[in-house]
Image (cartoon, rainbow, N blue to C red):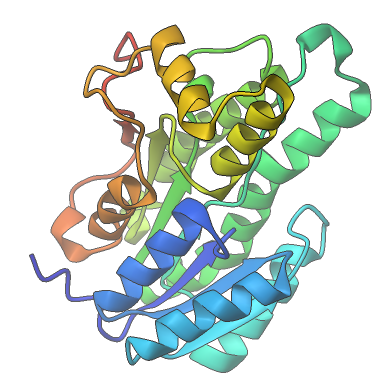
Length: 264
């Protein structure tokens, strides 16, 4: 399917690796010019080179999106280089495994700033321009634990659950202005962060990385029989950013191989 994103400008937060990188590449392959941001400048430049190789304009902005001014700084840079933001993908986020009783106030605040408030601030900056032109797309990337809380990811789960709720609020507020918001809930995706965690676990236990993955799947079987890959999420994100999804808003899509046990 040709998503016909030529002439659109997309901004993908957390675009230096994993799901964010793959979404940025798919959007570029479908014709969009792309802005990406993340903390690691070296990884950003690698992805920027991949996007440029697809023949699209690209701007890479190293930034800490957990700060109050970070999102506005990123959007200003993308607007100056590419002329605005038509498609916003709020992908920046990360969780840390720690039992709920061990979480400090700082842990909770840090998770909320990264996994919720960055999306709030990016959306707040982008929505007025989208409303003025009568067209915009916001795709928020949440997490399975936002649906099924986990005591070892309590702060992350709470923030992602709030992001799911925030997505619906945005849709209710601005869909009538042509700005559509949807949310994607990935399950266990084999990106760089998961790979690094598996390597740490393997080193600590004497197992191989593949044995760590196998143990994970035995503990919580995935009905389709495998972990997800970033591309499993990226195609849906690109579709939701297109005019083919012009009557889809306020929706929340599980992309998890069937692991979430309930639809709500």
